[in-house]
Length: 222
Ligand SMILES: [Zn+2]
Image 1: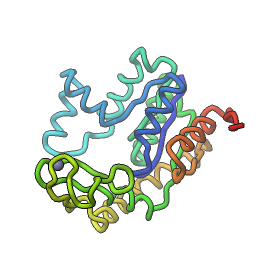
Image 2: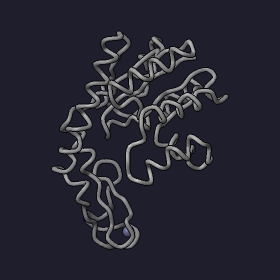
Image 3: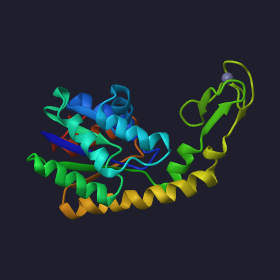
C-alpha cells in the first residue's frame, strides 16, 4: 500500500487537497477528525476509549489514535493506500506511526508539505466573519458577503469571533507551527519530504501535489 502524509499549517488547504488527491489516486482519505467521529459513532471499544478523553476535552492519547489509524488502514477502501490528513502532529506521533506501519511491513512512502507563508495563513484564517443573527459564515477572500459587513441571508451585522481575530490566530498558529516543524524535520531526516507551493490556486497545488507524489510530470497546457 502507498501511505502519503500530507502536511500543512491550518489554512494551508490540506483537507481540500487531501480529498482531491485521494480521489485522483483512488486511495482512502484518512482525516484524523473523521476517524475520531466515526469511532465514537460506531461505538467500538476503541471508539469508546477515545470518547472518554474527548468528552473531558482532553487530547486522545497517541497509542489510541495509532490503534484507530491501524484499524482504519485495514478497511477495504484503504487496500491500495491512504492519505493521512491531520496525523502525525508531533515528532513522537511520527515515530509511533513509523513503528506501527513497520509492524505490518508498510511505511510512509511520501510526506508532502503544502507551504504557505505565516502572514498568508493569518490573512486566510482571520478572514472569517459570522452573522449575529444565525451564525452564517463568511470568508473575506473566498466567500465574501454581497454587502460588506451584512449577512446575505438575514441582513444582520457580521462580527469577528475572538478566536478568529488576527492576534488570537497568530498565538495559536505559533504553537501549531512549532509542532509542524518537528514533523517536517522527522520526514526530512528519513529523506521522503517534498514540498509544494501552497500560494497557488487550488488546481495548481493539486497538480504539483500529484506530481510530487507520483513522480509523474503533468501534461502541460497547450
Ligand atoms: Zn445570517
